[in-house]
Length: 431
Image (cartoon, rainbow, N blue to C red; front, side, top):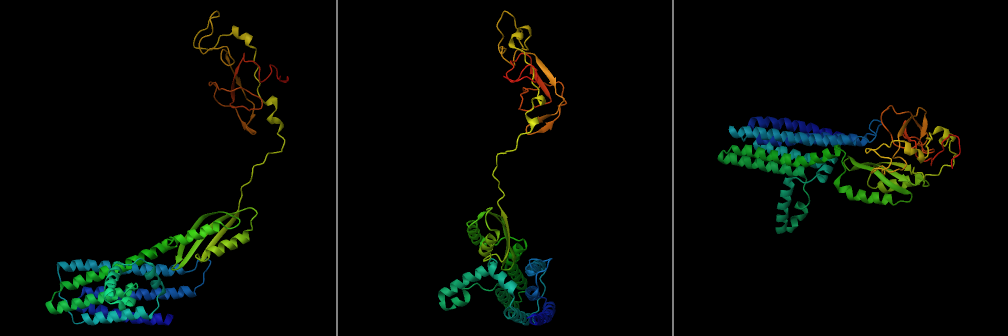
């Protein structure tokens, strides 16, 4: 197989050399544009040789997925170079419209048939797997769509031609035939009327056909290089993932990612969460068996459910958590001593008058605040230690309640709040 590709490559180089000489002698830009298709055939032969090398090459630790992306890159580079050649022809044609040179038709028709014969012979003799797949998988070009419309009209008149014209035509064969027809029309018009501008118009037509044919292929191969998921497999992948999620022991399927590794090769990875009592190997075998029908290179990560039910702790509570000596119990005299103190209110109170509004004789109101500095380290919450707060002029709310912990380093106590939560003397028992 490789020697056949090399032989066609050598013949292609010889043909390109003759065509370039004839382009120079005829001064035809249209023949130059058609010669670029022969140069593209050389790129396709190189791509076919790379594809054959990929088939015999085994994956390595560096390229664990194999070398299939090399042929994708070769197709992308070939189509992009063909489009660049078409843009160059458009630029040269625009310059020729300003000053049209004389065209010599001596070798024009000979070069057209030589290029057409060699292009068709190369396309039909060498089986180019990458370009054959891309031409079928990529979207149709505008040239294929117009030819398909014309073919349907002809088959409506002559039904016997439906087996030839109605199937999707090969875009490379189509552009070779269309370019040859354009050159034949150019030759006839120049020979009859010396209409040299038709050569430039034919060059523009061939360049546009080349660009329109290569663009869908470059887009398709570029998406493969970007590791995108093919749109035509979305429905099949969703169906397979739903089947996997219903397998026995499977709780969740997540982080799924599928991409095209090469032409016709799909790779993917998926995470599967299973029950704690499920068999990992059994679930892995079932998941792989379901997805392997579509995804040839698959990585499945199985992990068991790590959710743990909360349980009540049976460990005895530490002594320092409920030690009354670690908490401040503020001494609180009885309410009878409140008559001898000045209440802290915005309205002065008189002994004979009732207390002013919002100054009721209740705990926490008509009392003087007492600031207690706490320099000890006390438990907070579940045994966390908090030191004293560095502020010294802010009154912080909150009572020193045993068992509840301290909220700040400073405390505000009240001297005539009834001793409901503690006693006047530490160490005495609470009521």
